[in-house]
Length: 94
Image (cartoon, rainbow, N blue to C red; front, side, top):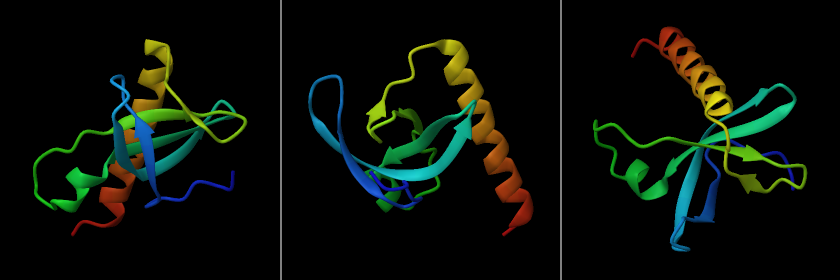
C-alpha cells in the first residue's frame, strides 16, 4: 500500500461488521509505528461546529488498519495528535 495521505477516504468495518467511510485527518509515526487519525466522512461533510469523533488506528506492515489494543499506546497516540492540532491552530489563528 502506498503512503496514506491526509484527506483520503477509506471504508472500514465496525464491530457490527457495518461498513463506514472514514477520512484521514492526520498521520503520525510514534516509536517506528505509523498511526492515522480518522473521522467518519459523513460527519466531516456536515461542516458544523459540533465536536467530531476522532478515532486512531495503527497501520500494520502491510498497510492495513488495526485497532490500538493497549490504553497506554492509545494515550500516547492521542497526546501526539492533540499536540499536532495545537501546533496547527497556533500556526493558523483564523
